[in-house]
Image (tube, rainbow, N blue to C red; front, side, top):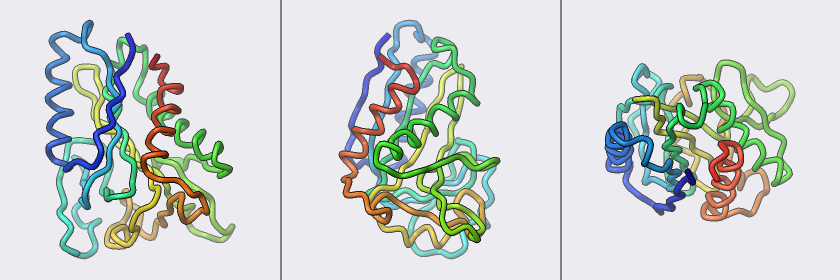
Length: 213
């Protein structure tokens, strides 16, 4: 069954989160007839804290709201210029396990970056995608964050990909729970790419990785 790709534009975080919950709950009653969907969007400035997240990973209050949500992982930041992709998938129907799903989502970002001439990789124990810096750096720089929730065999939440945004709000947190974790974006890597272009390309790579015809 083909997936529907929805480009939502810039939308508030909480109503989008609630829409994912509602979509997943409704499809549990009719999963055989409900197509998978992939939502591509941006959000106004907001911090999100995973269900087991520690509030102390927010280092200062800079006035940006923080929402405690039901995905895995710690704290991250969303803001204009960052592409957020929400795959709403029936994992059982597609024969996907959670670890494989995470790997494929990461690979979609890695493949997109390779297409742009940027070498990227995973980091053990820290889901997401990273770009290496100087050899003596404590951490590589994070360019994409990932967090999921599975209910009724279906997933929601997803990944965020930094394109052309204000990175300063990341300095107010330990990104994904890692003190001193640097964050980067395609603009700072010399890539001339708009969020709309990045969203279109990311959707294409995700469809390929997740086999969403």
